[in-house]
Image (cartoon, rainbow, N blue to C red; front, top):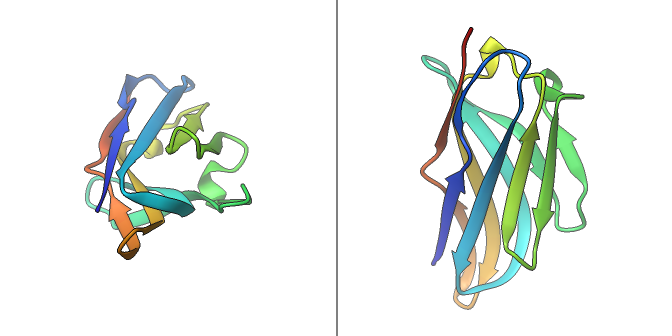
Length: 119
């Protein structure tokens, strides 16, 4: 079993920055792809950014140049550096981790962290 916990959300004004963190715990043997998703009020959940085990990254067009995803496998952590935040970035941000455990492969989600951008 893998537990995923996000932190770092909050309320900011447009143009400001936030750093989200995610920590995975459990009987993890290997971390595969890790990703951040978000769900805005009244909208479907969407992919924000993903990072592979060799640190290859993919970003949604709406965050390119503003957000950066990083991982620290020793700390079993995932980060999302968000800058130049916009009103449309408001939502609940979820961390997704695909890992190999002692009992097999698992895809785990955190409970989410709220990001609110308002003026």
